[in-house]
Length: 119
Image 1 (tube, rainbow, N blue to C red):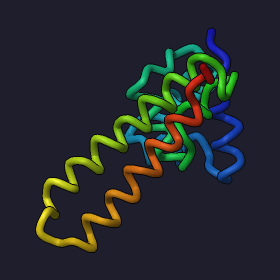
Image 2: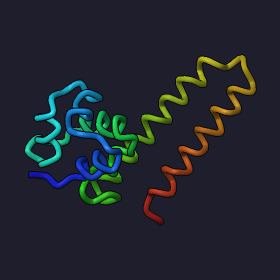
Image 3: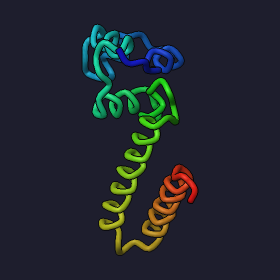
């Protein structure tokens, strides 16, 4: 059994297990098992739950900011950077859009650097 914060965030958003299940495209019993830790919170589940609950995936883990949470946060940040880079490739001819995307990439890089240990 793995402790997590799924129920905490679901309840904070005023959602029932049925409503969260609908958002996830799954049964309420699956939501219940995820909350209790009877079903493993794999990375795909964490991403889906994070999106449905509007919370970074790493925050769903019991020790937010711990080793596992930090790893997922960095992975999420890297995915965001990859998405921004892909968008940049599509808007090369639009200077203002390119500048805005470059600023977003710089922000993401800054977040990643802040999460890295000093030294």
